[in-house]
Length: 327
Image (cartoon, rainbow, N blue to C red; front, top):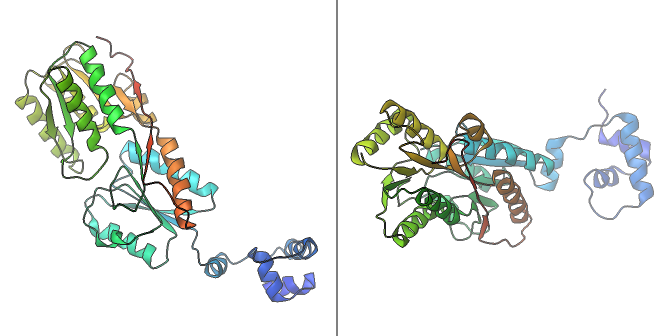
């Protein structure tokens, strides 16, 4: 028969209440009492009921991760690091892919409000969710503006935009196009556009930003980027908002007889391990994904514990020179 807490208490010679306090590390207990109870647990091979402990502590040990899609290398790598960091803190994760699905994201947020998860880390593009209006929520956002109270973890998007645009100008090109999401989307990633435009203006060059929705399907993106080649037939370079889109553009360029980097230069953004290994020739801006995950978890734990946090955490980026990107 599976041993119960009463059996542990009896063997240790303490009350059930004391045994429960030892189990949940609650209140002052002498070293002698701690040893007696732990020895009894070991002797009986007593395994605490996790659900009961969570109810006692009023914590679930669960964290929700809500991102557009883990099939994207950036989000997939980020979730991998987040899960690792959370596991080190004794949390388990629930992962929600909520691309285009406001109801799904709202459902996860309601789980938080109902106490079914201890916190959320979000990086989706959905906007206008009413439940985020509450202050002091144990929520952390990655590259997304949720409300003024929820902290944002992000790479230095402006610096990344400067590095990318400057890299292309230094290569001797002047007709440089930037691709980015809709300007109405509230995300620090818009600073990449601001940096691109600022650097272009600094050199007396005309900036052109081609807007494309991140959530489009592969086929829809390919159609839109074919339109880009038709709209700007004389473009010499592209600063692309993410590496996946850069790979689509590389495919289209090849189909149109445009050689990279001989007559079309590209700089992407994200620099995941996967993309740098699969397309090593792509020059890109590397986001510090592992460190972003670590900071996000640190900040979330502080929010859960009621500790004050900063409103924004900006981490440095680096330029990765593609292995065949010289011109």
